[in-house]
Image 1 (cartoon, rainbow, N blue to C red):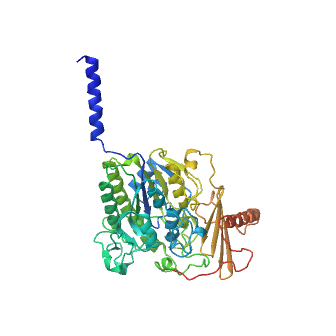
Image 2: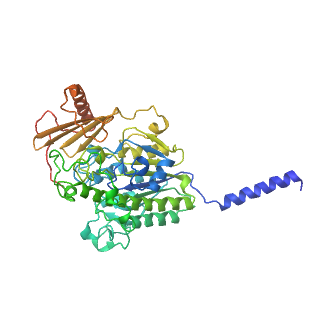
Image 3: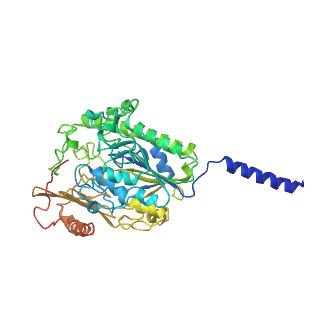
Length: 479
């Protein structure tokens, strides 16, 4: 054989050998959603928190694009996560979700349903705080399933969560529930890893939804995370207060009963130490999942979306929970990592969790269903001059309303049993919302401007409250 022909033959055989030994990858990218619970936007090391240790979340930030002004949808009752989870699945806004969003009706097409039509396998593990019928429609497979809002201590806590195996009939009878023997985050990561291993080298793309229940209380991080943070070394939030300055309508909701009043610096630091311990623990489980993707050759062909469902106060503004419209309660971490997603990039586009659905559809070049209302975040990623929204609207029940402008002014209005309060913040100078400018004479024109913006946003988002009526806020039964 001539030398040139010999070389070509050797090169051909070598390529065939490499191709046959490499893991088979799907033509379409896989989709993996990693969802944390009660995770405020600032509780990620790479997003500016110098105390909390989140090496795996930091790596996602480094390898992807972060939305620095992402937010949840607000809430219709104390469990904001119900709306957030329905929003991420349907792409719909707060007032377009049925009732309290506890039920996702069949005409509100869910993301996994849409992907099934494109040949995707669908899988879930962890928390589902909506109805079981929608869960059955959404997923082909699932494992270590938790139906509910939180792991109450009397029901085993995070240490012995009450879980289900997948039931294709959708019945999930109480008799089939079982008690986990490992921490909740470990159980959900284990299920996700088993699914990834099962599907490595597969030709059919998958959609995997991993919904952790951490760092939601009870804040009981397992060893070694329970001793990772010394409360004495943790700084108080810059907007720490012993108590909230007025009744916001949720002074006695369950979350606010977790710490006695007034909140002392000592108790807030202890709570933050436990909160950070929970975050570091779930970060480690996220790391296990990412490592499995890499080991299986799936990482380079998977779009990873990491997000939180809502924020948390943990001492900010004298509050503990998330039932408010301050930044600490409505802003969430949101990071996208994957093929053709810019690395180590940040965008300040105003966005909602509802935008994830249409963004995934655009990423896959498929049509989003008419029932999805969100915006395509890829426009903000690839065209930096694109303004997705000039303003963004928030609502908590019928007692708190807010609007934020693209130039970082924010108005919050309250009406609790006929008592009104208003707060105006310049987030450029006061990102922690400590200086209320609503009564300052020189800001009255801005107050009037933001009030009109709020009214316009309410109309756009189908909010039928009439701010001209003195009792526009109504206190509903609390959950």
